[in-house]
Image: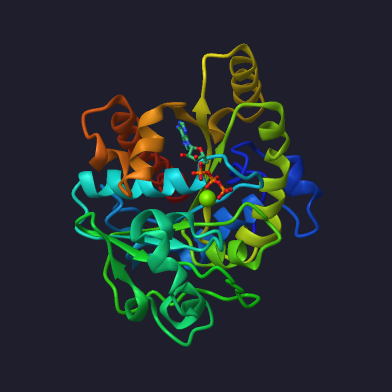
Length: 314
Ligand SMILES: Nc1ncnc2c1ncn2[C@@H]1O[C@H](COP(=O)(O)OP(=O)(O)OP(=O)(O)O)[C@@H](O)[C@H]1O
Ligand SMILES: [Mg+2]
């Protein structure tokens, strides 16, 4: 391995990355990029609309993206739903949402609370995490054409080191929603099953304080165990024109630069109304500025993955 040449994949900086250097596993970000080059085969890319990822010559389909955060209520579930909606807008035939949060927010929004209450564990992601079922066995259609759901279970208990078996289903994109508690094994399972992660953050002091915990989660749970996992960045969410939000956004950008999405998701009632109607905002109010933002975030997610793969191939 030849360290000190590639930027850290997590923090987007060079060898001065203190997290990598200080981490017991060594220069983790550098290790990851080098491992992509193992065997002399460069990482290649063929991304377009996230319809396929090609790593080390291996075509990966579908692309799996996890929403993660140390804090609750930062729009993980809302972003998951709207990324799925934007992907459908973008031409994907099928998008699978996996609800790995025992709160079952997405499951309730898309299936209704009554249906969710009556689900047996073998009809949910619980069975897929235990590997007694594959995703195709328990997946459900929703009222949104092309949007599939793997519902959560209120007493979800994910076995340690579980990886989801996505067999029996052929979506172009999979989006996994996770709980806010980073000690929950559901997050580890989601990260082990993913190619990319995105972390919504509300620009307030408590939001900023959660950044190191997300980085630690990625170091300890994510990237070490799953070398193809890419952290695509922090997504500013529920942003208001308040002084504290401006200060915190500027601080986050100053400290973490390119690891912060350019796109910003404003606080807007359309997001709440769409979720209440059990639809992505791209479908509930397709012409709204909220829907436009959702499509922009999806576009940036695609381009961030593509850029990272290009960098790996260079
Ligand atoms: N851009 C937005 N503008 C206004 N309200 C929003 C926006 N995004 C999300 N919300 C609302 O904020 C609340 C929290 O959102 P959400 O449930 O998606 O967060 P979460 O991170 O998934 O929460 P949890 O950690 O509990 O799972 C919800 O009521 C949701 O409707
Ligand atoms: Mg949630």
